[in-house]
Image 1 (tube, rainbow, N blue to C red):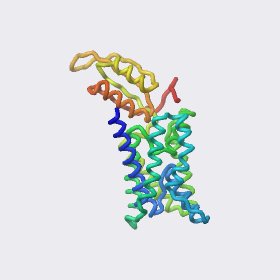
Image 2: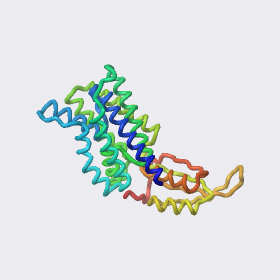
Image 3: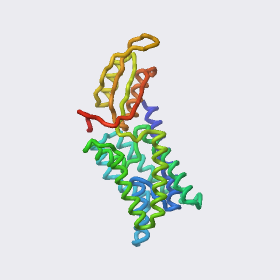
Image 4: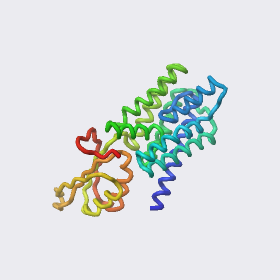
Length: 280
């Protein structure tokens, strides 16, 4: 268990470093804006520098914006998830201050694409290991739970504000390159993790009773048991069906590996859930 936490913490550190690297070497020099609270911090820092005598660094603004979100996440999302997410934010802010801003390419398109890929790798693996980069992810998740709607539209709406503001203040070309960054980063995150808000897991195992107890100890989710039989082996096995949110995928995967490493698990996208589904 301790080794697992060390690995998770290491992934969060690496994810924060890659986020800061993508920002300081690609997006910031090219004036291409990131998504989420990182993009808001980037935009606020530039507006304050250009239109007022005040200069506040992107790293400090990112940390400042995430403090109320961390409190919201602690109450509404979950303690472990929020702690790791806030650690990710603190480390990202620190790396943004440490890593020098340096232009790697004069081509704005290359900056948008490579910045998107590098940041998305960091974000994708952070999500895959049961944390997030904080900010917009947590807000979208809370809104999604309140209305029981997919996270995607909330993410799109909030990111649209960044794009439109950047376009209005600094030219629509910059806003269009920000869209290139968003598309690239989303595709890479989808490859590494998933952007689906709900997932259904079918678990075929010989240790159904142990698996049930372990899942219920970790997740507050209902499980449907389906009797099954192997067509080739002719062996009787239990099929367990469980619907989860994407943020619970990491915990479910750990439970399955601990209880029955030989279990066959199929994770599929869930486009809609009708009836009772716990959102808290």
